[in-house]
Image 1 (cartoon, protein in one colour):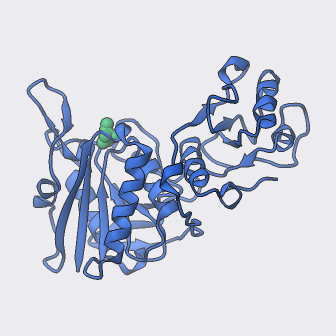
Image 2 (tube, rainbow, N blue to C red):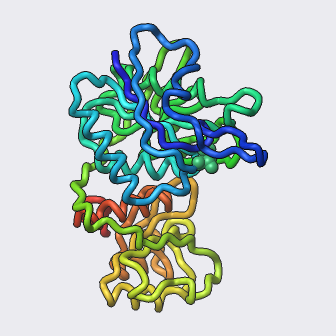
Length: 319
Ligand code: ASP
């Protein structure tokens, strides 16, 4: 079987420079050289896409990466596609690709929390399970995946939960889709497929604001209608906001700036008919908000992709 490993940078590719701090420098070939326990039946090739820390990813780079992945999917000699990247924004990049990808070839993202110069770096083991996942029959039809710390998650659900620990990637509520036992990927669950959106690249924009709603939030934190193409809000609880921000949100709604709401809670979704006080989910409904069931950073990615595909209605419910 043949797997292409696309390297983009991050801790997995970082080495310690003379200044003491680590930064991305290793190539894809460097990364695959020392993968332990890899079967001789798997042939690896590499593609160096970039060597950046993941917070440096741009919307255009995410789109280019998804086009590269689509090209490899069309290549019949490729059985699996693995992408290595920094963990900080891995959930956003993987989800962006998930929303654009309609191929059959398994696509698996991975990275590392400890760079190769530290004790027990996790990059080689993560790369190994990513390659095993990409060559596992069960990976087909499960959308873009994230393999990390002996677990395999759906790009749609996974989130980075800890700034330092190796078990940082989790899928709140559902848990992983598969676990890695010995040399086997054991599949346990699947998620509903993500709608694939056809993007008009010239309409891609990063001008989507993402705000966490907080108690007694100053209204000045809500942007003016001309500032952004859309505003995404992680509301408190099941869709609740302080009354002070209703008026600037009404102004955005009047000017047809799409508003997308989600919850700032780690688990759960927005209510639609539980409360009706001013600032409750009924206020969001009245503002014409789109409702998202993904976290704030993924909701922003979904909004960016939906705007570029002119398909906010496909992406989100609007109760
Ligand atoms: N700062 C790094 C990055 O996201 C962290 C990591 O790779 O884990 O590129």
